[in-house]
Length: 112
Length: 120
Image (cartoon, rainbow over all chains, first blue to last red; front, side):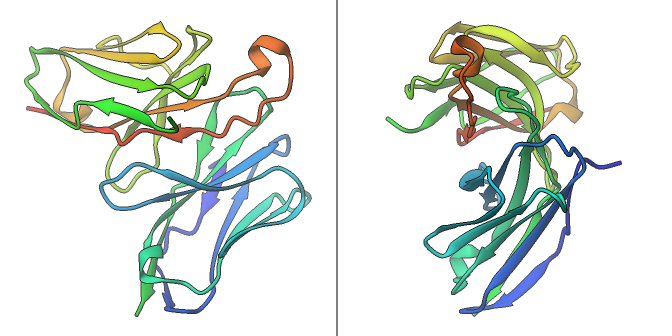
């Protein structure tokens, strides 16, 4: 059983629309959640992290966490072609535990 | 300085060669990581160093040998690799206060640019 699941996509979204990326996790004890963006051939870049239930906004990005449903999502508003990348969801089980578990990633394409 | 650097960017080696990958960070982070990433797959954790001590080894073959000479540097020594070891090798670092003070650590991990390794 996969510990962190994401829809692999590809997810195609028109420019200017909202892109919605979803992630579920199996470890109910998971405490912190991260979204990384990875362009082809490049390394992952941390764009958002969230620890508490609810929404966290940073510019065009909003992370949403629902621990009861074991669900975390990333919304990208006013999508730009430069947002086209693979988005990796990562979960840390316990504070102080250095091991991140990654989902397989969702490939997002923004269509001009 | 808010970045993790890795050298070399690209490396081609034969199966009998010995080479080393290097990683450096000057953010005062006390945890450093090696990941391996194959094409279209997520990063796979290989090793974790916390306060310069190896804390996690994900059952990595002994042909990969990590070393942490000090809190800013992390090396990965390579010997007798196989073609299937060709991948992008990523270094990451994070603050890890919990291991030292017992305080909570949020452990955001920041990645270096990676070394693209090809084993012939």
